[in-house]
Every structure is written in C-alpha cells, then in structure tokens.
Amino acid sequence: MNGWNGAPPGGWEETIALALSEDIGTGDLTAAIFDPEQTSKGYIEAQASGVICGVGIAESIFADYAGVSVKPLVEDGATVKAETKVLQLSGPTAALLTHERVALNFLMQLSGVATLTRRFVDEVAGTRARIVDTRKTTPGLRSLQKYAVRCGGGHNHRMGLYDAPMIKDNHIAAAGSIKDAVAKMRANMPHTAKIEVEVDSPDQVQEAVDSGAEIILLDNMPPAMMAAIVRQYEGLPVIFEASGGINLDTVRSVAESGVHVISVGALTHSAPSLSLHLELE
Image (cartoon, rainbow, N blue to C red):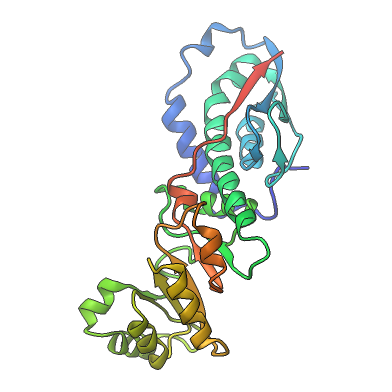
C-alpha cells in the first residue's frame, strides 16, 4: 500500500517541495534541541469522521528523510472514523517533528475536499447527475484538489483554460451574441473539441442549441426551470450542466431536474479541513 488512489496528480512533487521550503527554510530551530540519534515512534490519526486524502503525500514527506520509516494504513479515498490511524511512523525524532505540520496541512486540506465531495455525491445518489469541480481552486493546489475530488467520488471539470473551451457571459457580451461566439470558436477549434456555453434564460438555451453547442451550463436557474429545459431538449446530443450557488440543501432538487452534471465551486474553495494529528508514542 502506497497511500495513493490511482496515479498521483501531476506536479505534486514540486508542490511539496515548495511547502517544505516555506516552512522549514534554513532549518527547524525547535527540533534542533534533539540529538540526531534520538528516535521516536508515532502515528497520524483522524480526529473526525471523513474521507482521507493526502496519505501518499504525507508518506513522501516523511520518507524522503533518511532513517524515517513510514507505513500507510489506509489509501486515499478511504472513509474513516475518529481515532482511525492513517500512518505509522518511526525514525529520528527531529525529522518527525520538523515534517509534521506540512504533512498534516496537506492531509487536512485534501481530506476536507474529499469529505465534502462525498457528501455531495451521496446527496445525488440515484439520479443521473455527476458532481464535478470547478476552477475555483487554491492557487498552486489545483491538481491536488481535483485529485481529492476524485477521491471523494466526484469528477473533474476542465483542468484549466487550455483543455476545454467554455463561453461565459462576458465572452458572449464581448462577442455580441452566443451565435457569433460559438461560430468564432468553432472556426478555430479541432473537430474533437466540445464547446460549452453558459446561459441564464430559456431563450439563451435555444440560441445555444441552434448554434451547435454540445454542453450547456444552466447558470443560477431554479430547479423547475431546469427540469422544463431538460424535458424540452431530451433526445438531443446536448449535455446540460447546472451551476451557481448550489449547496448541500439544494443539490438534490437540482439533480432531480434531470441535468447531467452539477458543478460545485464549494468543493474546493469552501471545504472545511478534516482534523488529523500526529502523536508520538
């Protein structure tokens, strides 16, 4: 067991290196009180129920230090209860304490994202809607946060501006119309790309459909309006996505409207951290 759930997200090593550098700097002044030969054993455990994510990262943070032994006890994506041990550690005391906070920071933040994602996924169980993330991520942590969403049972929207086109309200305003925006984009896109258009009214839905958009984002619409739109265009090769202020209290009604995808920015920008701590024995 290496802690990861599938392939690690790209760029994670650089992210860890930056986090360690900003915390340790030229050296841990407090851990310097310990003799280099002094060793300890310990474990990291959850202090609340949730979905764990970041075990592979924490393992790497500790294992990169000479003499430290790390044993993951669960894999990312595992559901745990309070007092569940997720990692066993042994090695130089100074190394364990120096790397404690960075490892916990990743574990707590990513586990929070995975836990909140699982709650949204559970809320829409039995519908065809899939929960996806957005680009509303913490700068520098996007690939890790999107990995955490997957560990929580969710799916990823586009990674960035470079891997999928989306025509939003400001694009439409600047281009003059949905029709013109889609036409200009289509002229410069490969035939394999799907174009997504954000709309906020039934009239804009019709314009997007007539323009040949493959994905239509229904922005801040009430569930009843979304349900009527989905019924009207059922059978067409169009994916309907719902977005805009969706929370745990409203996501079920949104899913029951029949939309295919529900994008939730809160998964990454508002997930509370899951509490974990390191205990030396």
